[in-house]
Length: 230
Image 1 (cartoon, rainbow, N blue to C red):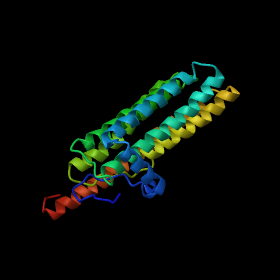
Image 2: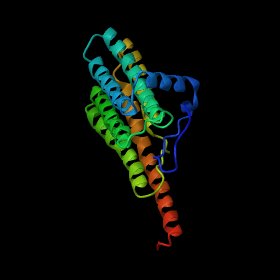
Image 3: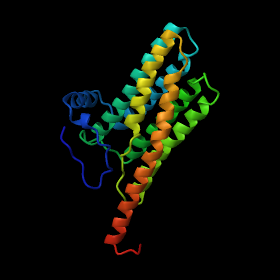
Image 4: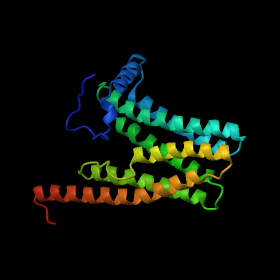
């Protein structure tokens, strides 16, 4: 598959693994299976829902099943990220970009983030404000994406920068699921989920600020080129 992007196409999140042989092989396999980018985008949302379901049920079953469900949740989150990688490769390198591609590319991510982070909050039962942490993390995750998309709609670049972008959030959630499995084995409360949500909340704030700053600078430079007053 050769890269066929043009300057008018939407920007892509910089992902080094996109250039790997195994990612290209998986994308070719999906092409042979007849999969389309929008279908893969929807599948990412399914995996996020499965991850959320595993997290939610993990505290309501026996410890052995709880450990299994938490490990599966971590796996489903990684499958969600894999879908996020492959849908773009099918669309761009595979030449299957559609007019509605951006809708399918962005909306499932927002739903997936909310499902996973909200469920994590409700899974925190050792304090009374776990659900509030989940809501705060979900809303801030949406805000990071909103700032990025808002900048793009105003004519600036879409900035994927920040200490708590999607990959960092999901990496933390994955690690939290695995640590929570260990906690379940030794009978500890859900400290890992609590810490992960706190880090996500604290990390999203500077992410939003950095993206706003970069977007503002882009727009001011565009205004200067067009002779607009500051």
